[in-house]
Image (cartoon, rainbow, N blue to C red; front, top):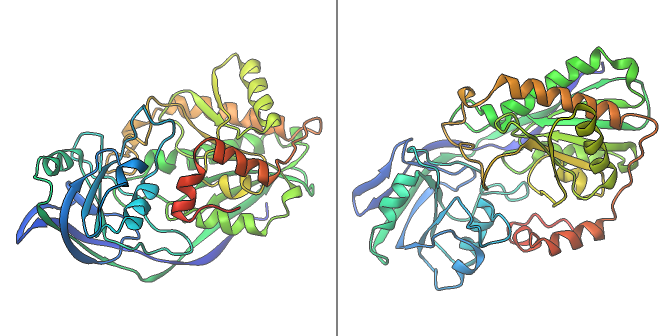
Amino acid sequence: RDVYKRQFDIQGWARGDSEIRRGADAIASGRNTCIALPRSPSGETTGEFVDLGYGVPEDFERDLNGKVVMVSSDTPDSVDRFVHRREKYYHAVEAGAAAFVFANHVEGTLPPTGSVGTADAPIGDIPAVGVSKETGARLARRREGEELTVAVDCETPEATSGNAVADLGPDTDEYLVVSCHVDAHDLAEGAMDNGAGTATLVEVANALAARGDELDTRVRFLGFGAEEVGLVGSSRFAESVEPDRVKAVVNVDSNVFGRTLKLDHHGFDALEAAGERVSDRFDHPIALGEELVPHSDHWPFVERGIPGYMVSGETEGRGRGWGHTGADTLDKLESRNLREQAILLTELVVDLAGDDVSTARRPTDEIAAALEREGKATGMKITGDWPF
């Protein structure tokens, strides 16, 4: 009931051509080798090429002024946290680099995409491109100090996005949020990221519609727009809510690809306990994580102390795998996983909606301290995402 869509304005970005050249000779051009990263500025720049390997923070502690720097999309196991693409980009900007090359670590001629801007400053400072693993390996064989040109052609028209909203269950003042983001990158279907989360939200809504009399608390379903360019839709919505009225957030992003459902509960004890109850009730594995995940649509709520899950699928290793590439297609997903995960999440929402379940907020200074402790504060401050 009460279904509506709330539109908002955003700075648009339209991908054009991009390439890496040595003099007049193209080394990498075309959709299978080199693509502009969303929010890259248009233009071209020339500088000495430097391969920084993984591109962890200490790799930028050298003279990079005017250089074309390349980093991997991976993070080594020796580093105790995943270093996000945007953090690597802003380290390059801060070091004075002239251009940024983001090389995939997944083989298959799959250049990766992903935004480099922020909601407040959507267009980045230096040209940025993603290249396939194979192109990155070819570039890495070049002599350090050789001059390369990175050229990006893109447009930044004004655009709109929006959030879709619908309610189900009793008309209580307090409500649960069940959310997903409905945007994807233009390279493929966005099947995992986030077609899977969107399909799961619809399945949970269908199941709860048949079990509405079991709900003690209103459930608000939210399909957020513009997640991939800085959590824009969820940030706008979270700013408008009264925190004490949101009992919990169940945000589904990039599940199904991994068979085991993963619930990152961000240290909220009530959310951890609910996940354990559902796992025990069904005698079915659910992975639980307590570290903070500041990268999807739960985060604008969690940073304000509102209890929230990041719901995904457990996978091996770090990073997105085929996500953010042209290989994020439907054939990678199993309908069996969708069924199992939708069943578990439906039960989780019914459990959390119970009058006998209470959820406590976390003080924001406690969340800030946890980010510092987990080593994530430095990257968030570099990218302009530090909210405290």
